[in-house]
Image 1 (cartoon, rainbow, N blue to C red):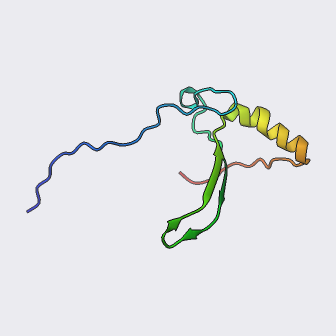
Image 2 (cartoon, rainbow, N blue to C red):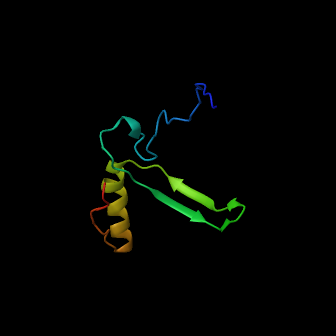
Length: 89
């Protein structure tokens, strides 16, 4: 026979998520399920685990669309591809 007891586990929850450019708390903004990510993972994933060095910045949707995209497009003469994510729910 199995018996169970209730336990309370502590979990890490994001309290604030601050944009590195404009300092807005992205957790409080109304972007729905929108997300941005600029990240480089450099190195190797080994049997022992992920030993890559990670570089990243936290940027809100408004700064990405209004500042980062135009800067990259102008500086490097590239155009961001626009496509819908059509994953089934």
